[in-house]
Length: 363
Image 1 (cartoon, rainbow, N blue to C red):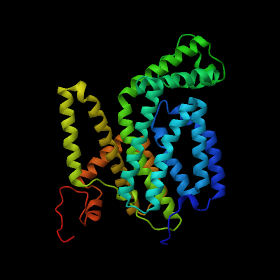
Image 2 (image 1 turned 135 degrees about the horizontal axis):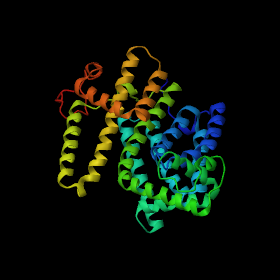
Image 3 (image 1 turned 180 degrees about the horizontal axis):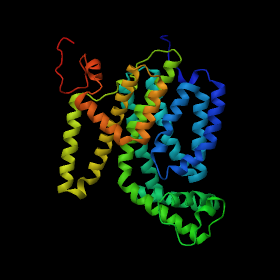
Image 4 (image 1 turned 180 degrees about the vertical axis):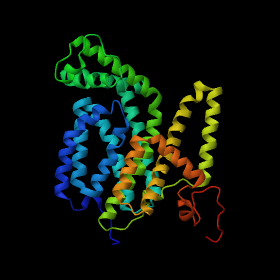
């Protein structure tokens, strides 16, 4: 491969894919924002998708789609939503681009991007809290309430869909099928359904928001670096990169995470009010790490059997979005038993990240 410099915002645009990506972004952004009320992970993958566009399609696609995302948030959530969307996207994209352009080591780039993402999320929390004069969860749910009220009839099919999915009980007198077909709700019934959505959202966010911030930052840093570097490599420019099939936790750190998780669990039995949230956050991180490791182990087997990247991509989608529990189990098995035998091949050399591996004084 060439050893030329990486200049992400000066690279050539693939114009056919650029136009297609912008059209898809314009069509899908609002539905994704609405669905994010049910699954906030969808929004946390937006920076990764922008980095896919920057790496594979070109800077015009990445910039325009970023503006579409900010504009959609401004339309739905007002000027404050647009500001938060800008803080959400810009820092992590710039950090990821800088680390790639400087050809930093993959793991260092992941750490920097994840750290920047976490700081950006904390800043968004502070902005929303200051603007609302209340705690962050109340601020977010108030913003959702105001947006749904502002949208009026446009929100009715969305509210009906949430009720049909079982998120909350359907109020008496509401014909879900008719509402989804275009029949408008009365103002009283609409307000009742909005209150139900806000109640469910408030209860979930108070428990899950800290875990989502930590795991979302980690995922954005890891996958963002991976897709951006893959995009640069596809253009024939060499830079440090670790294929997904090689991602693994050093054996020593597996023990560290396992013991820490057990300690947190025991602590919750004694001090549940104090450690319950911390245990939930750490358990989410534990699950995220081993889910990714389980997916990597499957991708390793597929690669060894000569399967294409399409199969590996399908394995990732299935493991991350559909059968996460099975992926976690595979990741733990890979850590404990090396059932794929990939560690025997990949860990032949000293691993600088393994705290239990003796150092070579001459290395």
